[in-house]
Image 1: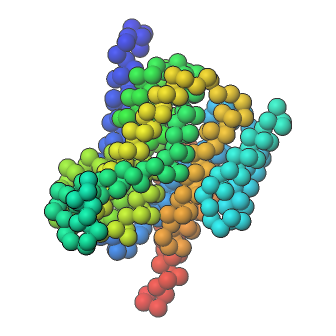
Image 2 (image 1 turned 90 degrees about the horizontal axis):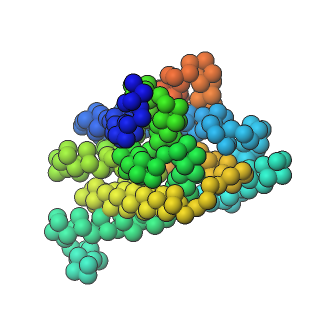
Image 3 (image 1 turned 180 degrees about the horizontal axis):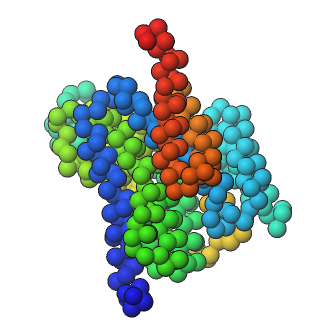
Length: 115
Length: 254
């Protein structure tokens, strides 16, 4: 088995099967599942709500249980950064950039201060 | 360039081909915007991680090109650096990519132009479905004529894809390994950007409720049902938000 793992083509098989097929198949299933679904139907509103909640779950996971460098930052500082992002976003009339900059400012500034 | 632009300006119907080419170019122009810049930065954060675990430039570019969904790319990077087997890596990536399915289902009715849209066109443009393009499309496409939507989305998606691939290659080759607070900041960009752009793309109070419920339920389900947490968050959070919205807005009819 170790010969397989070490060979030059192994990463490409991983990328093709575990990468490409494992992600792209969901998009294809989505195309076929959408069938004759209409934009103004209730079913469509439900699917949109499910997709939205799913992405929100990913957002929470990326902030609360990150791997790597962000995981070294204490959880209270990560949450403080997100909270100040929300405050900055609301204060400046729902500006995307205001939210992002205030969150990044608190995280980078706070973490540079702590270490 | 000029003739098809003129047709649109004068309000005449352009031929189908010219109209498509025109909207494709408009989509490509639309790609030079803040979300693309943020996505580029997020990929810079990823190249830093990829170099750390020893992925080559070719591998990084192939992953970006073929997968085009940053959270799933990060999962595969983790699996490859841990020496995981093909099957377990594929399962982990597939679980992280399930969200692409409801996203695609929700986008297709917006993109489709009745019977005139061919399925293989939809299969091709579905490759561009990822949070950035999805949010952009859900916000901007509904106000466009139906015939314009698919070419516009194709132009937008392919341009963003190309620009991000170029910047990823450049940052892999030229930037020194990013460390410390800046690296943490680059990783935080993805969730922060996702959160605000999802909020802006939400059309109804039901969508907003789904976003907030997902943020709360996600960690709870992650704690109690790791592995199935994302699917559960989507179905439970989305359904509760949808039913609540339905009752709030249609009480008279029910």
